[in-house]
Structures are given as C-alpha cells and as structure tokens.
Image (cartoon, rainbow, N blue to C red; front, side, top):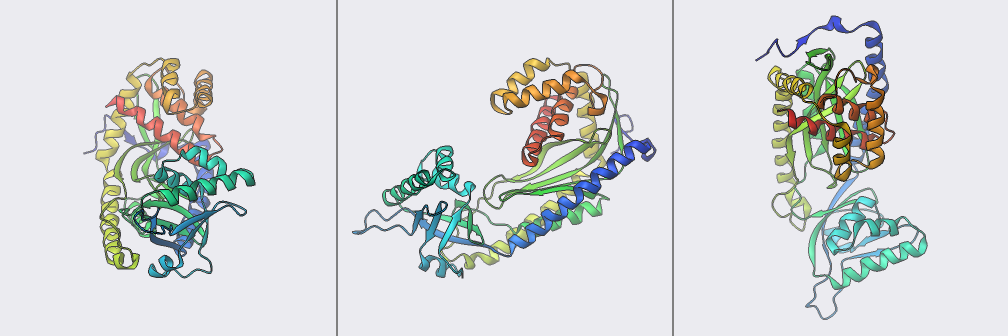
Length: 391
C-alpha cells in the first residue's frame, strides 16, 4: 500500500528546464526503441533452428563430423545437408558465417579458450586458417554430442545446449508492452544487438523521494525487459529508475531470471513446435503479471525505502571503487566514476554527503555518457546491485 512518508507524486515538480530535458530524452531515444522492435520482428522471420551433432561417433570405422569449419574470408561453419533437410531448413547454401558469440560457445564445447579463438577468428588469414584447423581437429577427436544451432539468415549466432528452451521473443516483448501500457507506462528506450535485446519503460511523471543526506530525489519509475535468443544472457525483468533532473538510469534486481533450459529437443525441431508455442504463451503470461507487480505502489515503496536507506549509509568511495574494479568494472571505469564523484555536480544527481546513494549516482552518471549502449546498461545493473546493501 502507498506510504506517503516514503514518496509523493507531483507532476508540478517538473520545472520547464526539467520538462524539456525529459522530452528531449524521449524524443531522441524512442526512435531507437522502435528500431529495436522492428529489427526484432524482421530477424525473427529469418531465424532458423537446427539440432545437429557436433564431434564424431568414435566407434565408427570412418568417423566423419556433421559440422566442419573453413576460413575463406571469415570463419565459417558447414552443416551436413541431410541435417538441414531433416530440420526443414531451406537455404541456398549449407555454409554459415560464424558470429563471435557462436565462436565463443563452440570453443567452450570443445574446451578451447574462447577469447583466444575469437581473436584468431577476427585476425589475418593465417589466424583464421588456424582457428578453422583447431575446430576441425576437435570435431574429429571429440565424442559426438547434440547442439542447437541458431542462425539468422546465413549467420550462426548461437550454438546452444540441446535442452535450450525456446521462446518467441516477439510474443514475450509484446506481452511486456501491453502490460506496461495497462499500467500507464510508456516506452523510453531500447536496444537490439546481434545477440541481446533491451526495452526500458516508465510512468512519465515524477516521484519525489526525500532522503536524509542527499536531498530530494526526483524519479521516474518503470520496468526493463532484457533477453537473448542466442545464449548471451537470461530472460530478465527488472525495476527501472530514471532520475529526471540528470537522466541517470538504474535497474534493480531482476524479478524474473529464466535460463533457457528444459527437456531435450528432438532431432526434427519442427516436432517441438507445439511445446515452443505453449512455453511462449506461459512465459508471456508471467511477464504480464510481473510487470504489473513492478509498476505497483508496493514496489515503489520498496525502491523508495532502499534509496532512503542508501542515503543513510556512508561509504569510502576509493575503497568501494577499488573493490568493484577487481571483478565488475575496469580500472578505467573506476577512475571515470571517481572523477564524476569528485566533481560532485548536482546536474549529475550528486548532492549531499558521501553515501552509498551518492556512489550509485556516480556510477549511473558515468554510465549515462558511455558510447557503448550495452556496457552502459551493464553498469546500471552493477550500480543497482549495490542497492541490495540498503535492504
């Protein structure tokens, strides 16, 4: 239930300068979100799934792999035409370009260092030749196992477990957007890379959270959906917060984290179409329910309380950033956050004393201006994770 001691809602709190800043943010970012939606639909139409053996039957008199590799132009994978036919895949060629995400996943399955193989795959011709040779040698000398090969057009983007639970991402995103609209939310921003997709949404009016040591915090509140069809991240649904005065963005702990694993897929992927449709429908229903919970006043209460608690907790910025740079952010990123904190500009949302909340704002202010949109979102997750200490 709404707790007026934690936050208030006041549309009048937006002065003209802040209104203009928010309007410009939406004007600039909403087209990106629409582009992401269009790309999701377009690539979904040419996405194919094939269940195929990788490695060989060691007991065969003449073991031959069903998947081989070549380095002509770039690292490529060739799938046996019988495998493609069994999976009802009709393409002009059985040769596929390998996305670096798929290269890493194949390397893991063969026990080859993924970073090294990726470097070879992107290198000069002799390096690509070496990468193909390494993969072919492992194909001939590795016991056969089954994988799900997921491609878009003629590019393989994921080589996944044969227990990978498939969802129709378009239907999942549609369910999310419908629930957001029902809660009075709007699409704020979005991003679709080759292997991941993000959509941020919020209620377009401010929530004011008074804090003990960092002043009043003016927030817009909503939800973010993220997923990957290619094994580059779980299906996640998180609370999304934007400080309207500075446009810093933060996401909190996921309310839904689903690793795509289920029962083994059949050799003929078409046989599992009914399961695919059922799993998607079930997940879409769960997404709608959880989105409603994230937008609820009860959840806003929870987030406002943690902001207030974070504002009461003083921290040593240098020590905190040193710890973060050990495994979550780079030393360069830590130095950038420290610079933002030292500047302590109210335009970056940095006011008041040296608290956990100020550290979080230093990280989100640094992330706000990053050129890499995917890393920007990762930093916002790391910053939101620090808020767990304020429970």
